[in-house]
Amino acid sequence: AGSKSNGQMDHIMEAENNRLVDNLSNKISMLKGIAIDIDKESKHQNRYIDGMSDDFGSTSGLLSGSAQRLAHMIGSGKSNRTLMCYIITGLVVLFLILYYGLGRIVR
Image (cartoon, rainbow, N blue to C red; front, side):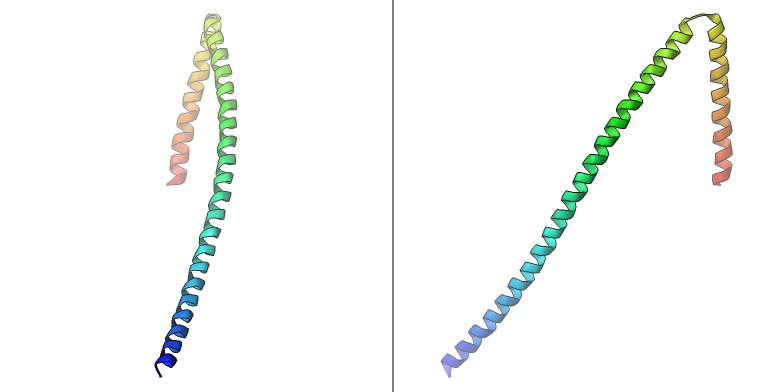
């Protein structure tokens, strides 16, 4: 009778081990899927950041060119200074109109 109960105990332990192995296998598969998703997302984010870097580079070039043209316009004489004052005043007025207009729309 003792060998029979040892055989049953071995069978129960083997079944438990198999259940634990299956559970571990499922968890490993899940972790593998998560790791693959993280890899895909990191590659996507790196492409996005590279694109932003290119955009910032072109914006920087545009702003430096605008600043150079502005410096040239300011330094070129009185008639351009008057035009510059009108442009700045117009931009400030446009900004205020948009600020208050959009502020009332959003509320």
